[in-house]
Length: 525
Ligand code: 5AD
Ligand code: SF4
Image (cartoon, rainbow, N blue to C red):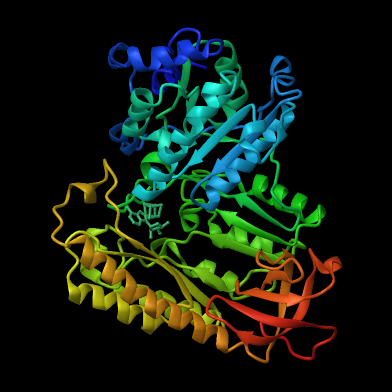
């Protein structure tokens, strides 16, 4: 690590009370008795991750590292031991969990789903809304007795919450029995951090507030053999005024196209049937390259030629969704015409205060262009209700937009203030009761539109990628159509992992029932 990196790194260790790992009575006594001393220590020695620093986007180049490896002395640390990772939040976190699982398995750890069996438990956290954070703090509370029983258990918090100074402070102050906190830019350091947590009596805290490099060649233990996630970029520079992500995930930085293409080819060769290209704002892909003029459209055009049946991407920002991408998506083939296009609000004035940098009209124009190139495209979205000072009229504009676009599904949220973001400092005159009532009214429309979209499939034959047994009934299999509709049907288990034709017999609000067909003349997607 060079001097500059050292400076960019927040203070990495905080002292942990003595004998934590060997004496549980001592543990209890120290935690209760010395928490003030403990805090005093932090206040003088610990510099928390800073949202203000995160907001300053530096000019220095993003470095791509190809030299990741687990040093020999760490590669056996997990022999005979078990790990568990609880994942909260988005697909990016799910995929980070696969990377951490890959590293842990390379160190000899085996996965377990039993907390009591685990030698290390990591909480991979989400900071997007307050309730996501509350869940994690609840879980930390539940884990305390396990730590009391087994002081050798390593408990860690990682993911977006660990990038927030208030969260780190709260863990330090209220949950000093935790062993490890590490940030979203420190994932590749996990083997070292585990060693530190095992062998030192201190709580290990490593949260880099630097903007993040790209680490290639990380191991991955993927969750399944049918669908895979592929990161194409990290971070976000959009700074929507309500959103914590640009602060917790660093600046926008794109993986090199050749690295992505190689990963997709490899997945295709391994027999994966579907990949989802991942990024907080995938439409900004390539904007940070200084040597080549290359965007998501070009990347999709390359991936289009790879022999993998289904390619999705998420999440899109309407602002950066350009004509080249629309043209490439119009080619169809393995590029699926389901587009998740978060709109957040139907009111141009709310969009302005959200700093989304598009209007209702320009969003509708984008939808028109997408539909022109992909007449059958399914559109889904994210919507926030109850943004500070949202009026009934502005909310009505969201309802009318929902209908005008004909979204087939939507993730809907009540606005949640996030400390350090501009919106959290805005005065808000909308009572929570009103926000809840708006959410219900919106959801009624979302449900109706979803049901109507499902009904159009009745009697049609669709291609379904069979993922496995349905959650409710192991006799029934479940899979998704190209347009991301969940289909339940009876078929031999041997079809799992295959794309089969299914005739839709019944539409429900969120899923379709169907029956397997051998041959079909015409297939609706
Ligand atoms: N409050 C509520 N919803 C939010 N989202 C992001 N930040 C907030 C917030 N502070 C929603 C947006 C985004 C989705 C991932 O989460 O709709 O698209
Ligand atoms: Fe958050 Fe906006 Fe970036 Fe999406 S585009 S991650 S909502 S700041």
